[in-house]
Image (cartoon, rainbow, N blue to C red; front, top):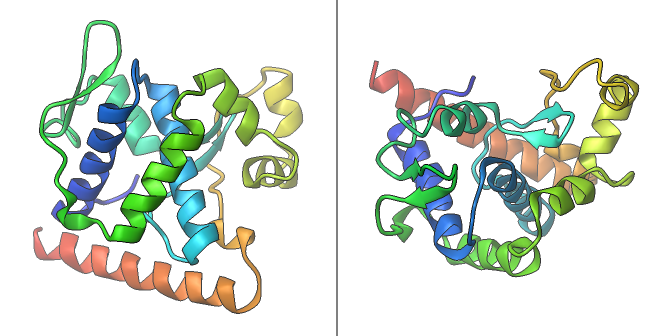
Length: 194
């Protein structure tokens, strides 16, 4: 599980508000894939993390476990002040989007991801993220998960995706330094509230 500071929770919550305001009939699987694509896009384009939250290698692609659990439980804790899950299991915003946690580059990246993938079905996004040249497939293959997933022996794992594998050389070093700074700042913020 990931520890979230108040600032991290606000950025995650507002990201989901942003998505839910722009994507009709938003359900859990589609949300999880769009969040992943935003993280991947930020890493590829700017070599920095977006939300800096871990994604695990599950059968249906990359999954952020905390968001999965929260949305499965109806958004009653971590995201309760930002979104709700309605009777049709659709994710809806409870509040207006607050852009104070976001840079112009992040807003532009979110818009680009939603323009490109927002109308795709959850199944299409799963298929996209299962492509052989993608980070999910490479990670699942490296850890011997493909066969277990294909034969329905497992549907999840705790193997984390490493976004630095998308980069090389100085770009990778820059990403890893930025990620470490962000994670250390998060740790200091969460410990300050304990």
